[in-house]
Image (cartoon, rainbow, N blue to C red; front, top):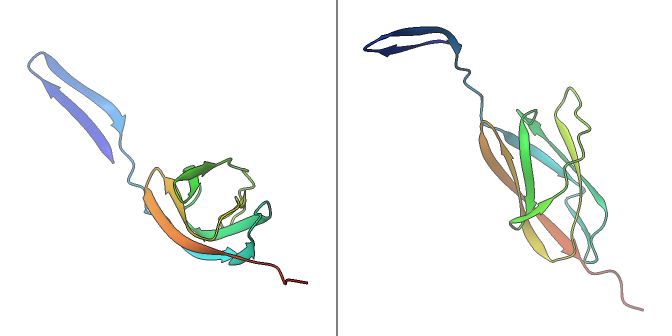
Length: 106
């Protein structure tokens, strides 16, 4: 969308403003994992190309920029129980849950 700035001393043309769609998550795979964390989690959704940050219960996780046409992101899961994964992009934020499971006791 073209933008024009109008001031008492003149106008500035040629600026552009772009609307971005909000992100959406369609899957977190695996949806659960060991309580020790450390496994890669694949986040699948739409409009993830401008991802700025991924958090696991408000704790930032490093971005691994393996951008694919179908908008996948990989993150190592931190150790915890049930948490919220939030993906923040230039178009907004969205979230999903992830559950940690205890391994079998021997």
